[in-house]
Amino acid sequence: MTLRTCSKRLAAAGLLGLLTACSSAPPPPDWAIEARNATERMTEAWLTGNHRVEQAEYLQARKAVAATGRVDAVARVELLRCATRVASLVVEPCAAFEALRSDATLADRAYADHLAGRGQPADAALLPPGQRGALAGVADPLSRLVAAGVLFQKGLATPQVVVLAIDTASAQGWRRPLLAWLGVAARQADAAGAKEEAA
Image (cartoon, rainbow, N blue to C red; front, side, top):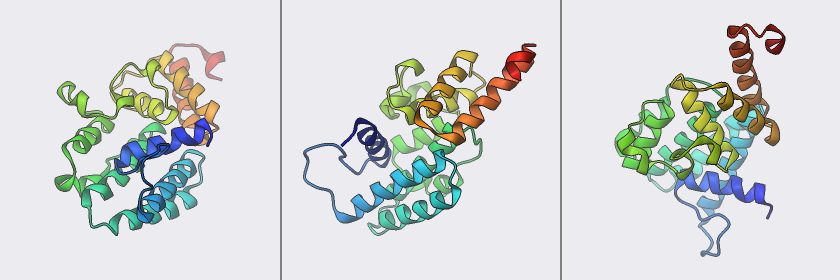
């Protein structure tokens, strides 16, 4: 298993809170494997700009998790999907999660608030590890883009944050967030009067 594959599996598993990717633990049940694989494909499809595949994989992941009858697990699939939007600067309410909020865990509610840019400092310990510290210290590429997207929503995306997000998306070949962050860089350069850089 490559490091990149392991990283993607850990990102999906961490948000779902259900799976133990890249470990020697007993194999997860079939529904969990199906959900993990579908969320990985869903995430990759969104980030590379393939909306049709993303939608199909999302429905597959949600169906696999819903078979457990655990509403909190379905809510985690919705959070992962919303996180990919934040990473790509699609600023919109996470409506599907909000419909399930009352059945979600306290940590998932805190993460949803974080994704919406209204997280509270007191809830920082409830967030996934990649969302707790300084942006430059976040190793996982998707977590780094999510953290940058949260800063953007709060109006705190400095040129350094934007460059880091561009470099991250570019290194992964993730077209959707790359184009979104390049647009931010162009607007920042234009606002600063750097016409050549904006162009």
